[in-house]
Image 1 (cartoon, helix red, strand yellow):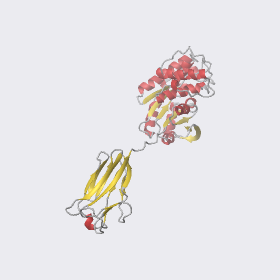
Image 2 (cartoon, rainbow, N blue to C red):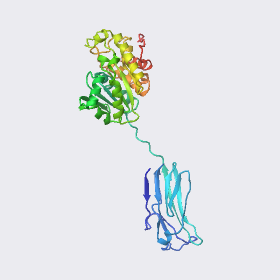
Image 3 (cartoon, one colour):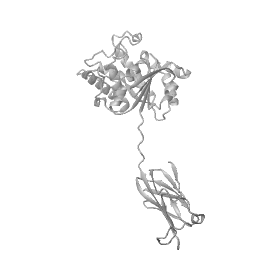
Image 4 (cartoon, rainbow, N blue to C red):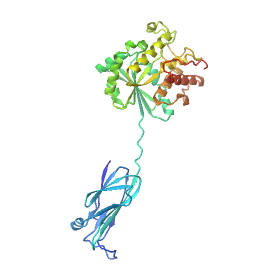
Length: 384
């Protein structure tokens, strides 16, 4: 902690002036021997140190032997630096007095100094920092409503998304190796989003002390684990090397299967069968988590959407057969991220986008909550 020198002035300004008379006398204080403590009061925080050094009228006065004491050793401790100087340390809140005196047979010099110790003021809470290294599926999940859910909970959050449309793990790894500035860096601060083009992964990782960083596969290969490696392993190593927060948690974003009527060119890879694609996604995300213990959190958006498809909403969670509906679809994904990261049940939240009906909000929250509880299987929600 800081060490602050309290100086003691020779002039009799504000302080305590003591004579060397053995008994108090009404006569004026002689000028030949005195010590001065000025100012006679100060305030510090618990853990702070102050150096106390009285000012003396003469070399003779300074050369005398002095003793130091403290009125309450539970509030203050003193350490003698030399005969005429001590270091005072604040131990706990309260006020105590430090005394210096020169015992003698016929002469006595003394002075007191009062010190108040205060609690250290609480540090300003740091915002939670979340970075997605993804594509348009992370755009759907984190850029719109995730900030609002944390804001309702009273938690400041900064959200980043390193965006390249359709970007695969293989391409992310190639960009990392070559420090390629191909990304749009979408950033949400205080609920306001900015978009800066020409970013590299290295630059984004250094931009904030990210608490959570997610990785994900492109939707084309999301259900094909053989397309994940070795790129997932390589990216995990890269992120851990370049992240500035040693306590950062790595996450894996499990994306969703296409709508059954999707015309996405990669859908034939799954026989144009939604459940085949979903089961492949579940298998790949499970294996990713099992094979990489560095991945501490799974964000099961794929299961959230599949849960939602068992409700009255049906297979209407996508706006184009693969990207999410911009209202309740994106809200459901944001709910999944919120509960996965915060550990708080999204069922206890009340905020929703104004474009989402009350019924749709209940379905979205419940689908997300069930997915976090059971990330690798569909929960039947046909009662909704």
